[in-house]
Length: 236
Image (tube, rainbow, N blue to C red; front, side, top):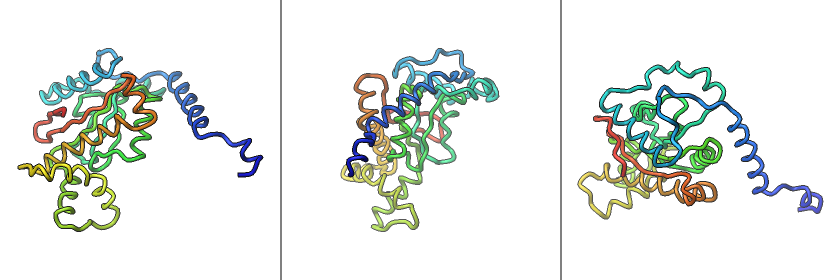
């Protein structure tokens, strides 16, 4: 690098710190979104998780309280203040706001077939933690997951699906390998659960932002399985 370039270059860390500070300032100056729920905004990871658990119980019992999605619309146009991030599968039957009975503005949702966390997902979660102030991350697998099933089939047949689908298979493959040696009676269920666990662990340990937030107790990451038939979420 030339001497002039060296003197005028900005370090990646400095650039990141400056951009993050600017984003946090903008987020803090925006008006928070308001949900229909009368519950106070969670201030700790455990409170955030309990709010999700309570919302799921209402969903299962068909007593949802977040049903008028026009409520708070004007306030939401001024900013967002979600309390939790959900890493969910792109499956059309998996709708986090319904599953946890939360309103618009409550959840920061990252979705991809197979609910795994790649670098783009990590960047989104880092933004959610450092800028938006989320308190908990739930990696949500679900019953009858087609992406996990396709990965199992690819391993058993020793072939890869066409197009870009091998990217999904390779991302989920470690979870399948982890449970194969245990010879589970339901390989799909076991691999789905392990996939959620592995990705919750990745969210916990990813440097530099998420690992620091977890170490300081500002955020918590958990894995869960959503039963499509019953609507219930079981934390692992």
